[in-house]
Image (cartoon, rainbow, N blue to C red):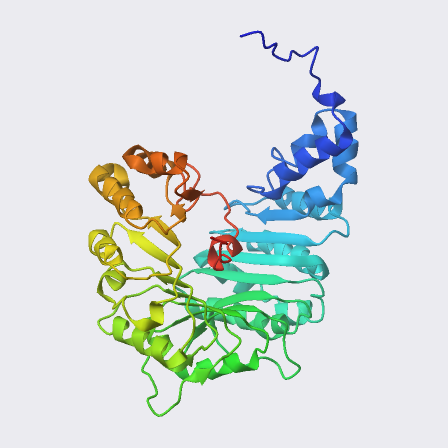
Length: 448
């Protein structure tokens, strides 16, 4: 092949690689397990290749320190045995654990699984629980007093998340309330999300949390945030029919830099003078007015604006002085896209804009090639924009490049970064996605 000799089994021997390189490869393979209870997947199978690999796998506890625990609907005792052995091989290494329980029928086995995980709570570093209907009910029915079992046993915990996927909310809240007080006292906890627990004040001794996600039972609960002295990023939701207490003054939180709200009404209860990044996920008839009033009241220097409903971006007064220093904006596609890019193309709109994020979600661009060309034309009309972040499928990326994006890249006029895992790939819906990746807002990119 053009004078280049390809390696053969005689000239290239995997077993001859330095131990450090083999271990680096193993670490990559074991960072994102699909199901740690599957003994036919890494790291289990790596130790079955040869004796030297087995010795390496068994002597390296870090290979066993990331666990995705997804028991089958009808788990056997072998499921518990596999988890016990996995935890044993991780020895004293800090643990990153994801628990996904969906319709488990054998509650005795489920109780044993949870028991094992709680026994190792001193080593929890990241704990994420994704429990669907039967899972929640099973956790409740085990009558495990998780609060007393875990109390004082979370010295390493830095992140805790609980995903909700159950209409039986009372069962979920019962379980989650058992955790909340204890978790808030974990000495190293930095990031936590409690989507079903009504937000409460930090414990009297304080907390180390810097990132908080929570549900507000009432807008009056917003004042609790002021008790979290180190929080710089918050994500809040509330009941859609929650009514603002017009007699209460907005809570001033000077330390908060990043804010995400599911419901724009939450902004009526906040004043954030240091805010740099704002994400709003809903759109109501008064959302635009609420956002503009919030910005005028906060008098912050906003750098990134993410209005994740297309109609919001198309309707809001983007020429408002509060947006003059915005250098990054998110554009949802395709909803109201043409109206949005027409507004952003106008002269003197967002004069500091340097990077744009396109989230291509509901409809693929292959259904609208003309829109892809319009997006590229829009980018050419904003020469000061130097960075484009694409959250879309790989096919949508190809269509954008065919529409002229590749030419802009080759000319050095635009740097493009991709996140093609934004949507689940066909056949990969069961893959575990660590929530902390897409959930917390990304750091500001450096754009000259």
